[in-house]
Structures are given as structure tokens and as C-alpha cells.
Image 1 (cartoon, rainbow, N blue to C red):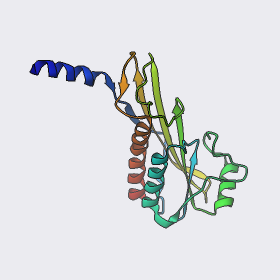
Image 2 (cartoon, rainbow, N blue to C red):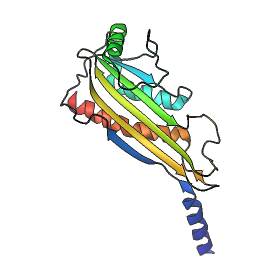
Image 3 (cartoon, one colour):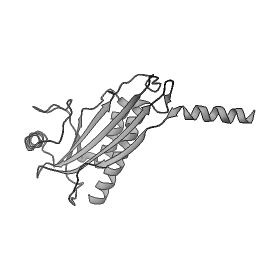
Image 4 (cartoon, rainbow, N blue to C red):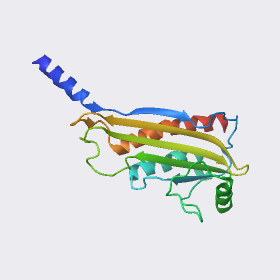
Length: 195
């Protein structure tokens, strides 16, 4: 009887997949730059799943706890659409944000979600062959006084279902949060070391 429970447990555990996580430095040759925590910051979310309430609240609280009242959250700009994914920002876009915010640093937090994030209850029971859930969270920090990028890292996660009837051990929002947490931990260390 004991062996039957062990075999059933192994079968159940092997049918759950967990994501693989990675953190990548996007700047190939980052300069030694210090960020002054006593300066002002604006956090802009780009291509973000705003319907993921718990995730958005966590992001806001994490950045507020790091910068306090020096941080402003802003989503609306004239001539700058935050709903469309932005590659590295141009000098013109940086000037536009600088003029509209009057801040020292821009924290541009971006997401790329494949498939698009959904807020359904059944998102952890993907049963078709070959389904992937791939999430990327990218943080770029720009010095708005000098109009240059000083920090750029990307965290990614991949959850792949190769067989029918396999379920994930994580919901889509949990996977997204863990992907973000990997990046935020690195950024927090960067700020505390250089700020």
C-alpha cells in the first residue's frame, strides 16, 4: 500500500510543469553609473497587463517602498503611447517625457507576454499539445538629465507543455510575478549599491 502512494505521488508530481527563469543584462558594456536615490523618479509601465490587479499592485508597492515620495507613477503622456511596446527610447521620446514630468530618472517597465496574459480561472490547466507560456519583464532606467540609458535588464520565464493532459503548477499571474521578482531583486541591489 505504501508503494502505491509513492508511485501515485511521483506520477502526480511529474505531470506538473514549472517555469524556467533567467535574468539577462541588456546593456553589453554598462558604464559604472550611480543613481542618486534623493533625486526624482517616474515609473512608466509599457505594454502592461493592467487587468492583473494583484501583479500591478505589487509592482507599484515595490517601487514605492524603494523610492518613497521621490517616485511618481504616470501612464498618460501627450504623443507617447504606453500601450504599444516600445523598443529602446529615442532622444526625442526622452525629451518629451522629461518635459512632461520634470523628473531626473525614468523607470520604464515593459512586458512581453506570449500568449497574451489572460485573467481566467482555468489558465493553469492548459491541455493542448505544445503550448508555451513565455513572459518577459524588462526594466530600462534612463537619466533624463543626460538623455541616456543607465540600466537595462530583462527577466524571462518559459513554461512549456509538451504532452496532452498536463497542468501547470503555477497560474499565469504567479508566473508573471515570479518573473518580475527576479528582475526587481537585481534592480533593488543595483540601487542600494549605487544609490
